[in-house]
Amino acid sequence: MKIQSICCLGAGYVGGPTMAMIAAKCPDIQVTVADLNEARIAAWNSDTLPVYEPGLDAIVASAVGKNLHFTTDIRSAIAAADLIFVSVGTPTKSYGIGAGRAADLRYIESAARLIAEVSEGHKIIVEKSTIPVKTATAIKSILAANSPHGATFQVLSNPEFLAEGTAVEDLECPDRILIGGETTPEGHAAVEALASVYAKWIPRDRILTTNLWSSELSKLVANAFLAQRISSINSISALCEATGADVDEVARAIGMDSRIGPKFLKASVGFGGSCFQKDILNLVYLCESFNLPHVSEYWRQVVHLNDWQKSRFVEKIVRTLYNTVNGKRIAILGFAFKKDTNDTRESPAIQVCRDLLHERAHLAIYDPRVSAENIREDLMIAGVPRELIESNVEVCSDAYAATENAHAIATLTEWDEFRALDLARIFELMLKPAFVFDGRGILSLDSLKAHGFDAFAIGKGF
Ligand code: NAD
Ligand code: UDX
Image 1 (tube, protein in one colour):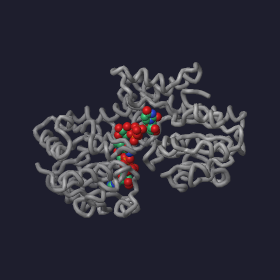
Image 2 (cartoon, helix red, strand yellow):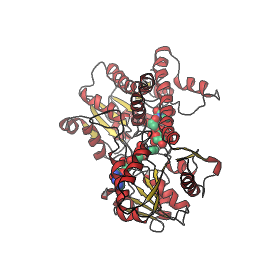
Image 3 (cartoon, protein in one colour):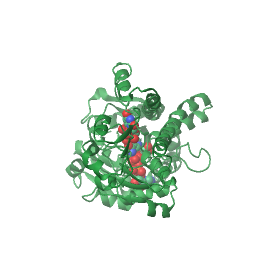
Image 4 (spheres, protein in one colour):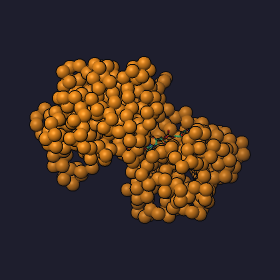
């Protein structure tokens, strides 16, 4: 089966960039990204894309209007497609059975029902969203029970491994593409049809095919292992602060062991992003459901440690500032969950700011890509009362405005521009003693000290 027309349900951080890359690499395939959210689709069709990713504008511009289309006409997009990616959100369930752990699959289910209702002929349905193992069974059963036009389907799993901030390079040159399918001749044919799309720009030896369940599970396990490395080094960061060891030196020393490797060993105020916590909790819930309490408890600790890391950072600030931050101006540098993205989902900055606001600090927040509106909304959703946000939160247009008259600075995102700050100027602007709490280990403690700051960094202490 040769794929000529692709549709993707969900124009978010995954659907938009992934389909833009497919369209750019496969000019002979029509790619339509469909979403219920009109504002999001309008933004994809404008000069200001809803997702900030280095290099993305050029990829979208190269294909949009030619073979890449963004639409809210979901039905027509489904009807025209040979292959449909489902890239809708799968957030942690906040109600009922499994609340706080299980994945909320309502968007997946409604997408499957709509596909069944609209489709004719034969279509390949691809799970791009991250979902619990065995979701393909649910999708298949919904499709089979609800197809008025007698359509037939093959369901594949093709999890996405891109990281935000590096999405374009990750999509252009991925470590691997994973495709899971049924072990039947029809399943193999569907896997091959999707593989041949990716093979337009990705070497065949990096396109891995497995059965459905291995593919679905591998995505959760990959994120769990990555997050586990961060919680592991963050646990050691506390020990480094207590002993005088330097966490970056420890990370370098252990990372040179080729069995351990150097990546994902940067201690931080905690991991954020829409995936790690959600996917580990999803894994925890799966293990509970399969009656594996030891396994679920093991992975739950990765999230516990991450929560503790964020709260101990706040505690460090409060204790150092003579046990009170009430009325004190604290400059927050960075609000996104990592650099090079405008995404703030599960950003550690949200919890840190919330807890500092509960201590009645005045926050002067600066992030180069996150809007004031977004910051205020995140804090509100995190439970900070509107009046407290209005009275105690100022969103600044640069780092210097934020640090003026501040008692302390907390760096919460590793934006490159923070590495190049004029420390002498900032020291002049701040109240004394001028405290710095580097939650990302991006500022040189020696240089801060030389400029007169009292500086603390995660995993290095004062
Ligand atoms: P997102 O919230 O940015 O986008 C999801 C979009 O789906 C929304 O715009 C929503 O309006 C739309 N949607 C919901 N129901 C729909 C329907 N029936 N038809 C059409 N559109 C519908 O989410 P995201 O960050 O793109 O993540 C999507 C999936 O990919 C999740 O399962 C996530 O775990 C996974 N994932 C995300 C990342 C990442 O870096 N963000 C990486 C890998 C995997
Ligand atoms: C992650 C996975 O990396 C990606 O493969 C998957 O598809 C989606 O989830 P993402 O969340 O976008 O990607 O970014 P990532 O680079 O993994 O960073 C996640 C969080 O961990 C960020 O808050 C980051 O700052 C933090 N982090 C990362 C550390 O604190 N230390 C590190 O060494 C690496």
